[in-house]
Each structure stands twice: as structure tokens, then as C-alpha cells.
Amino acid sequence: MSRYLRPRDLDEALRALGDGDWTVLAGGTDHYPARVTHDRDEDILDITALDALKGIERSAGGVRIGAAATWRSVIDAELPAACAGLKAAAREVGGAQIQNRGTVGGNLCNASPAADGVPALLSLEAEVELASTGGTRRLPLDRFVLGNRKTALAPGELLTAIHLPEAALDGAGRFLKLGARRYLVISIVMVAGTMRLAADGTIAATRLAVGACTAAALRLNALEAALVGLSPKEAADRLEHGHLADLAPIADVRGDAPYRMDTARTLVRRCLIELAEAA
Image 1 (tube, one colour):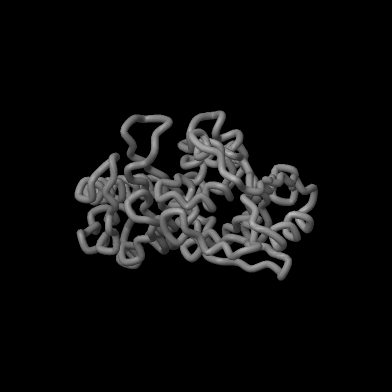
Image 2 (tube, one colour; image 1 turned 90 degrees about the vertical axis):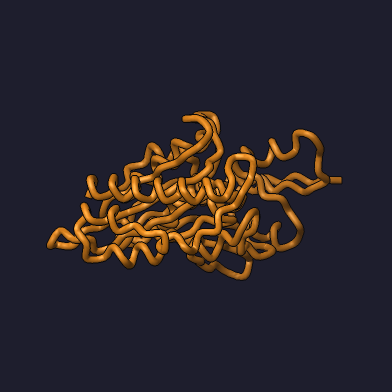
């Protein structure tokens, strides 16, 4: 017989996770659709009553986003300009009903290649906070989302928060997405980026991430390094084929690999142009 537990505090939730195999339920926007055609015999740990996992806070160290914070709360939060891409991504997560229920942590744990939040969070150098009865650890987001539906979440662990370091919150941020239609669509390709200028007006740092092209969203490290020291207007012109060499685009019903590669190149260029204008 399946069990259902809705703990009222984090310690109770972590003790339960340490003692059994539970399916964690947060917003439920991925959980329920996956069970429309058949029921699963599973124990449900409902974390919707855990206030410790909610809210978005700004401190001297950066921004803390509770794992159970909804995408609507991201849209409504007062965040630095570098988070403009994250806010834009939040507006692309389904419709208003999904944004009101879906959680940031759920989007990461679901680990879909087309998860809208992942590229934007990668461009902000996000780290995840993972808690268990044995303690708490942090991982960079690119070491947490490992592939299609694969994460580094260990047995007994719960994703409790996402941290954006203060050093990543300076500058401008952007997010671009291509789908088969304008709204309520699964991504074919996404690009998110941030750009920070030095005192002389040249590019001090750029962070760029591409999603829905590979099994897990990917930072464009070679291109980021090549842009340092250039003027913002030069950035888009320096994009070369080799800068996207790490991309190995997937193929599915939404697009084949060559189409995704061409689209990624176009969206990266557009993102750089928009970042240059904003910076």
C-alpha cells in the first residue's frame, strides 16, 4: 500500500527520506501529467508545507532561492539586472497556472533537457543546496544536472535551495528561446547569458549557456574566454563555429541536430547583441 506524508518541518522530511524510498512532490506540474495513463505504486512525500524551502532572499552573499519557490515568485521578486534572463525564463515556464504552481527546485530535479530555468541559472553560476540527515552540501548546477532526467541527488537528499553568488549578479542578463509557437511550448533551443563590463567599457566577463540542444544545458566556456577584453559591439562578430564545438545537439520530433546547431548559433549571436545593448 502506498504511503502519503506531508511533513511540517524540514527535519521530519529528511528523516523520512533517510528511512525509505519516497517520491518528492512539490508543485506537481510534472508529477501528475506523467501519471495520467497509469498509476504508480509509490510513496509520496509532499513538501508543500515546508516554509523553509520557500521564498527568495537577497543578502551580502547573493540571492537564495528556496527550492519550493514558484516561478511566479521569481517573476515578482526584486532582483538585480543580471537576473533579467532568469525572469524572462520564468515567464516561459508554461502558462500562468503552471508558473503559480511549478517550483524552481522541481524544474531542476526533473532534469529535462528542455527545462527553461537551467540555462538562465547556469549563466548566473548557480549552486544547489542539498540536505540530508547527514548534513548539507553544495554543488555547482552543472555538476547537479547530469543529463536527461539524471541528477547528482543522492539517496536521502532533498534539494533545499538555489544560491546565486554576489559576484555573478553584476551586469546585464538575457534569455532567448525558440519553439514551434510563441507561448506554451517546449523549447527547441534556448540561450541565456550575462555580461559585465570593465571600467574601460570592454567586456570583463560573459557567461553563456545553451539549453535543449544537449542532454544537459551547457556553458560555452571557449566563447566566454574569447570575448574578454573586446568591446560589446565586437562580441557578436567574434562568434565562430569552433566556439560551439562542445555542443552535440540532440534530435527529436521538435528538430534534428543540424537545425538545432544552426539555431543555437543564431540565438547566441542575438543574445550577445542584446547583452551588448543592455550593458
